[in-house]
Length: 489
Image (cartoon, rainbow, N blue to C red; front, side, top):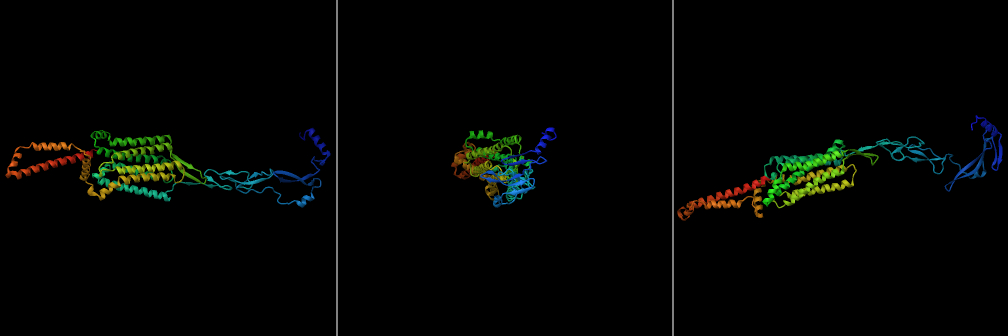
């Protein structure tokens, strides 16, 4: 009811004159309508989790005097009259659980701060900033990635550059001795494709170092996958060629030769990998991501896209490696000088072991500053495995075993190998029979003169010379057949 209304004004005037008594004392009001009988002074105590109120004195409003009970004066311990303290920066005020009239100070949680006294709330740090618990300010987060100057990065770069230099030296030796049997056995013109693909793989290993960029994130894995697939495809052709060159069954040899098409095989096997990488890039394009599991650090990483697609690219290379391994096992009985199956087998086994180990780490460790370095190490191990198994032995032969790098030595080994197997590369027996027939069809005078002792010497010399000529022609035909069979593969 408003005091300006007639009823309200009347009530106030009447209240000024009211005076009554109860068992707790007299109650009366002054001219202003305020209570004038005084107030009790209450002491609050916290007892067994509850607040207990004790009357310890009285305040006289008229006399403006405070009187305290003698017992309370004697036993009371006076201290600070404040139930709360000033909250410092880094803290905020909160209601006390013991007394709703007081408040307590609590530290600001991590990621928040307060920069004033008696702050009622903690402010959140802005993006790219962090703070510990109880902080009055925020600090800027540190951006981290694999630095070029890191010790591990320097080691990997040196290894990659050394691999590039080795490839350059091998390329020079291959070019110089391209027409020799050792280089032909190592792959011939395919050596250039293998060396180029290995060089690209080494370049891709360096792309895992340094600050990631969107373009780098998108090309580094496909670059390795496609280039190394091309290299493994060449090894596949080498394995196939060994089986084809030393297949004893003419029918099997004929059918295998029908499928031996080097250029189409390289295009198809590498093209499949190109399609896999293109589809994976189209479905989930790699990009830069910021990992903030640790608020102090912003870890710059590449989101490589679909893990399944990445697994398919590695699985496809592993499939080609397994096929190479099978072909190498089939051709394990080829002549020693032609036999590169042990190098192919070893290199493919090492590749599979390296990438199985990488897959285990890849599945169990998803985030980390040095996580991408693991893939770079796996790439370098794969490249060095191919270089050491497929090119260094050939370089050793052309540089330090020049006497063995002769076509006649290779053909001799091949001929001895076929003789041990009871096989011939050409119908040599037929040719020998023809030579015998031709000798039998010689003029009778050459036979009749054998009885003439006077002419025996010249006739024997002529017959011996004819036999040597036929033997030389027969031997030459054998070598030509071996050479033709070797070059056809």
